[in-house]
Each structure stands twice: as structure tokens, then as C-alpha cells.
Amino acid sequence: MVAKGLIYRQFRPVHWSPSSRSALAEAELKYEEQHASKAAFVAFPAQSCSIPSEILDIIGNNPLALLIWTTTPWTLPANMVCFVVTVDPYTESSTFRPLQ
Image 1: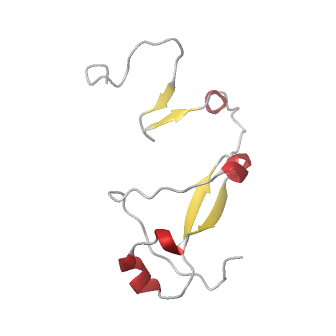
Image 2 (image 1 turned 30 degrees about the vertical axis):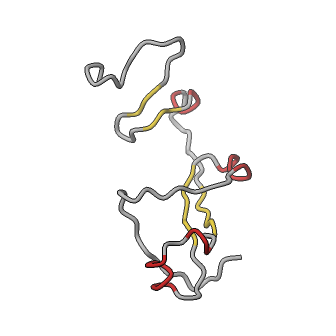
């Protein structure tokens, strides 16, 4: 990782999880053995102007939402945008419960 320039010396350490390929918060490093993280699943409605036409052809007039999983639900009120990375795999799913 050092040879690839992924690890370098700066003023503050960044704790890194190679398995999840993500930075870790300091609180994530100090969990007690009995600690159980709480997670939240949240459906963010997609704005029709941001949905690609090939997806609109499939869903028709049905609402589309992005299902987000997080272990930091206290940050949800500040969320302003969801990004979709085109090279990552996604799954299409239907629900019988309308979004509210």
C-alpha cells in the first residue's frame, strides 16, 4: 500500500479498513465487546429529472427510490444527495408498500 502511494505521512492519522476500503471513525476502533451497532434502512425518493430514460422506460409511473443502509442514522437529516456509481452492481426490487 505504501508503494502505491495509498499510505503516506501527514499530520493526523486516518484509520483505514482494507476490507471495506473505507476510512474508520475513531469511535469505530473503540467498540466494547458487547457493543451492537444500530443500523437504519432508508428509502430516498429519486427525482424524476435525475432518472435515466432507460430506467424510466422500465418503471413507468411507479415511484423510484434508492435504499440506503447506514450505521450513522443521526446524519440522515443532513443528507442532501445520493450518488450512484455506474460501475457498481445494483439490484432492482419492488415493494408493495408505497413510499411516504
